[in-house]
Image (cartoon, rainbow, N blue to C red):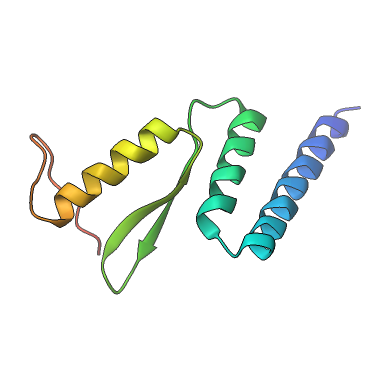
Amino acid sequence: MALEPALSLHRRIQELLLGFSRGISASLSVGGALESLCTEVNDLFGTRRVSVWIHYRRARELALSGSSDHEYAESATHQRKKERFGKKLPNQTPAPCT
């Protein structure tokens, strides 16, 4: 039946979100729970990388909060610190947040 794969995917996504909710409740750490969720979503959909960026509206800033690729997370965090302290990387212009 055609509905079975869709129901299976729906059930798996519900399990991932429940695990994410429990991870935040157990550790009170959004970053750790997001990294775990990103890794599991990456496996579920077969992607190269899953990342979650949070927009801090008052600061007008984007922050990488979780990623399934630790090397990417380190380089993106390092890059953001350089931009924050006025040392822009070559050939990069930060996109304005409006």
